[in-house]
Length: 374
Image 1 (cartoon, one colour):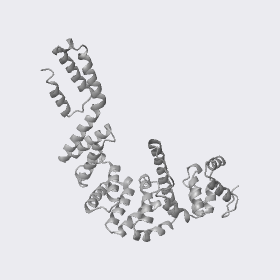
Image 2 (cartoon, one colour):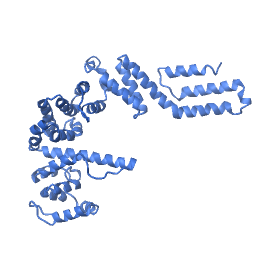
Image 3 (tube, rainbow, N blue to C red):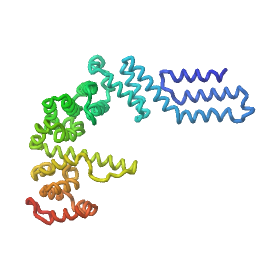
Image 4 (cartoon, rainbow, N blue to C red):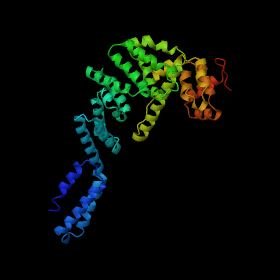
C-alpha cells in the first residue's frame, strides 16, 4: 500500500503551485526505499533497498527535473493566457526562459503572450510594462514586415499593434519605432509618411547624447539600405539629398562599419563553431559602402577623423583605406593610412595581399591631394 501511494504523491507534487525541487524527489526516493524494505525483496536482491532509489534520484535530478519544470511553467502560462491573466502568464514564461533561454516552447509562449496583448490594456494594467520584452517585440515586427514576400493584411495589423507597444516604451526605443513605422507605411503605399519618419531617424543632430542613441545604431544601417536601395520613389526623394546634408555621409559610413564589424564577428564565431569559412567579401553592405566611399571628400573625412582618438576612430581602419583607394578616393585613402602608427602600419601591411601591398607602396610614394606620406 505504501508503494501504491507513490504515484499520487508525485501527482500532487507535479500539479502544485510551488516549483518542484530536489527535495520532493528525494522524499519520494526515501519512501520508495522504505517500501522496498517492507516488501521483503531485500532478502532476495541484496542492496536493492539502497541502489534503486539512489539511481532513480540521480537520473531524475540530473536529466528530468529541469525539462519538467519548464514544461510545467509553459503549460501553466498557456492556461493563464487563455484566461487573459497576463501578469501570471508573463511570470511563468519568464521563469521557463530563466531555466532554459533556448527553450522553443517557452519562446513561443512569450511570443503568443505579446501577440495577445492589446496596447490599451497597459492603461488599465500599467504593472505589465516591466514584463514587456521590447527586443522580442522588435524582432517579431521585423519578421512580419521584412520577408521574402510582402506581408498580408493580418501581418500588417499585428505589426501595427506591436508598434503601438513599442511606442509606449518611451524615448529609448523611438528609433526602432521610426524605422519600422517607415517600413509599415511603405507596405501600405504611403511614401510621404515613410519619408517623414526616415528624415527624423537619419538626422544625427536629433540623437546626439540621448538615451536613444544605442537603439538608433541598431537600425541606422538598415534605414540607409532602405533609403538608397529600397522603394524607388523613396530613393528618388531621400537618397542623394540626404547624403548631401552635413555629417550625413560620415554618419552613414559609421553605421555601415559598425554593421560590418558585427558581421565579421558573427562569421568568426560561425567558423569556430561549425568550421565553415567565408569564401569572399559578399557582404550585403558592400554596394552601400561603394556609394558612400566613392564621393567622400577629404574635408568630410578630416572633420570626422580628427576629433576622435586615433585608436577609436571609426574612419581609421585598414579596410576603409582599401575601400577608399579602389573607389579612386586617393586623398582620403592616404589620410587614412596616416592615422596608423608605424608599428600598426607595418603589421597590417605584412599580413595583406601582394596586390594591396603594391597599392600602398604606390600611393605612399606619390603626392596625392596635397598629402605626402613619408
